[in-house]
Image 1 (cartoon, helix red, strand yellow):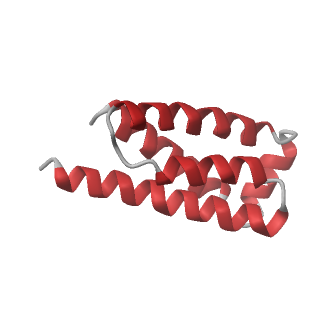
Image 2: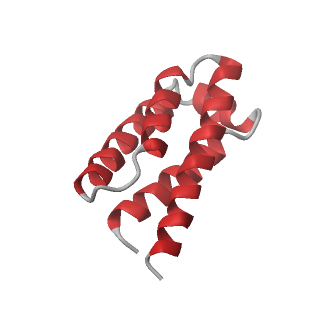
Image 3: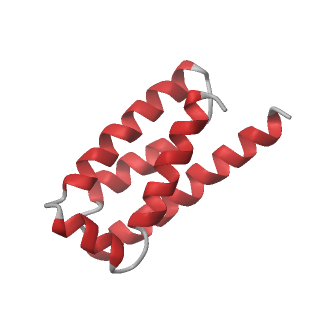
Amino acid sequence: MSTTRTMKLITGILEAILAIPFLGALIILSNSWMPLIIMLVLHIITLALAVRVKGPLAGSVVGIVASCLGWIPFVGWMLHAAAAIVLLIEVYSRRLQHR
């Protein structure tokens, strides 16, 4: 698995965890919003890797938006869920293309 796909898988799983109602909020609030900053950095790294290999960018872009707006209660939940879905679809679709 390439570095880009690995990063998309990691960020997709982490976004899915943050999208779990109450658990995601508990993780974010108990750590003073630091998970949002960490996710922002991870999404920027993933975006740079995807640009370098000319891969899909949508998942990382949605993840960056989710990290920036994740502090808004219901908006954050929807964006984290959307980012997780898009990232994991990109990982799966890229794997199918390389078989």
